[in-house]
Image (cartoon, rainbow over all chains, first blue to last red; front, side, top):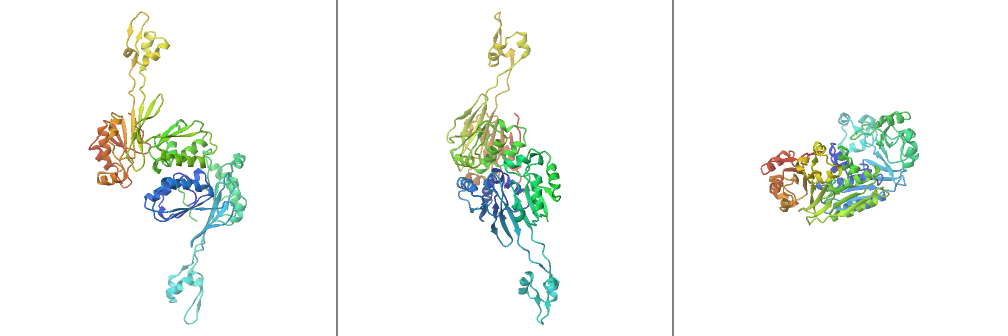
Length: 270
Length: 270
């Protein structure tokens, strides 16, 4: 999960996801609207019997708040909360497991802040069961074939990988950039990203205000998406001053047509 | 306001109330589900331009959390947050203004905890305009009549208070008791209260569990209401284990028929 604003535990309850499977939270910056859901989430997970550690990654500024919450409200919990400091000034890999990598994306806001780029690990090709049966491939050979190998039959015939498998779905990538002024380097770091979430606090008419408070306009977000050759742009973090976010969408789409607006509970499939 | 769980600022937005008029918050105890809405409420009020001080009353255990939130997220706010320690072991007046008094109600929970009794100040009787006109009562005499006085005409006729006024609505009282085991003294402190909110975490079947974790059953809440000669009982703080809170209501109503269930956004008129 990225960021944890107030009410996050309630939002989880509205999904079909099992929050006990949530093991890592990546925090972009220590502003209340991005972290005030942590105390409740941490406490409620304890009440629900969580045992597995929860690792929270984020800028150093978050540590005293977490320490205070843990010291005052989380004594005697059955699980550990670990905090891992993220250097918000460096673009580097901050997490890896067998299914994904997470990279930090240094951003420009009023406080130390970084976005995150999540890259799915390449997925193995799918075995075609009927071909495995046909060539009588033994079980122990399957792993090498899935990983890209051919198969040589006992009589020396080479069956190419492509005949034994169907191609896997391409690995997906997601970049999350909030809160920030437009950062040109994001386009380098996120070239070809499948989905770019970028904050779009303001409309064109408040472009100067955006600069003053360390935010972006929808149009600026779209320019980052275009330079990134992103496949899709997701706008969010809208100022409450706009009763109609469609204006932000229109301004972004003038630059980058494949743009959509974020909404509570929105689920996006490739 | 009494207590401030996560999401309170959102709940306010769902009402027609102006939260800039909220000046005092009374916290019963330093458990997350009663205080995790404070950071967001305090921060959002600052963003919305609040200038008036906000006074938070509560047990001493709350102070370090508040200090941590103020130090890490509330630098440069345009208004002051003051914390006033409430001694949770004493039944005493903790607040008074011209329209109400607030009294602490020592409760029994796993941590220092007190409820609050809010007593509306007596309301002045309503002047009958037509009688004032009839007797030609001068403006400067009105205040004394509203406060209970008679009026003596220039020729010595005494016009009784009752002829000049209609009776005010009786002053109202509200007691809030959560989280707690049943506390017999509550009945003394809250004799004749108009509305008693009492926690009812458990049903009869979990009476022993209630004792172990410092909570009440619905039936026990009803017994407190009966002993208090309360006019009405409002049950809340239901354990999530009961899909149907009607069972709690039925068990309470066997002891105290005028019982209702609390619900998000419920507004109760006398």
